[in-house]
Image 1: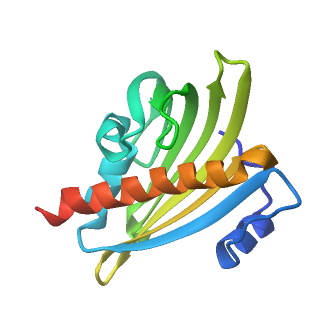
Image 2: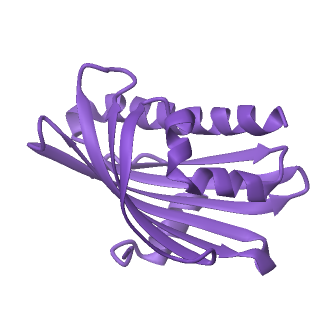
Length: 181
């Protein structure tokens, strides 16, 4: 997976200054969450796409189409279907490429993903990129996520609500799963 079109400097500025850029069709936001569970468990749960039907309630079905690598550097591709949370009458399908890297000696884990989401039987497609970092904290795990997504300007508030709903649902469901252990 290649994220070269995102300059590192730009990624840092997104993390340091989360904001919505109105001059372009791409929107981004940052979520920082602390959890009270072992970060290894969260990482393993988040990287296994079969958990996504529980973590993200908009996903209805998926298949893994390609997979390679090992525990330190694993890649896979999935095709999944979902219904939008705020407009469930518009089903869409996505192809996502995931790249997972772990550095246990640094107690750091990273999930990069690129999603191509298509609506109207593939007539209209949008891209998004996500970077999800896990680091050990004194409370368990610090999860930091940066999401950059395309959206037509006229639908910007709808897109933002959808992205925020899905990201928040994943964090809530991760907490629910592990706080009950």
